[in-house]
Length: 76
Image (cartoon, rainbow, N blue to C red; front, side, top):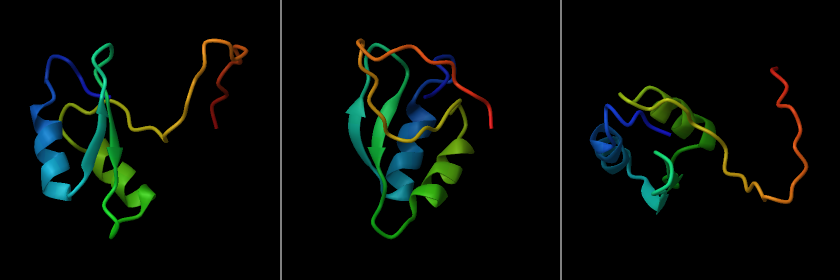
């Protein structure tokens, strides 16, 4: 997820520089799904993108269905 005011250009440049692939560019939210490079771990990749200008959140891939029960997210 990225800040709309900053825009996605810094993120797109970071994706290119890091060797990631854009799997999906969401049009209803300011976010993208990325495929990490084979030579990097998921943790390394998430840490790297968490420090890119304008990035506000980095999350694991997951699916949320509209029929899923609503559960509070617990802080850990």
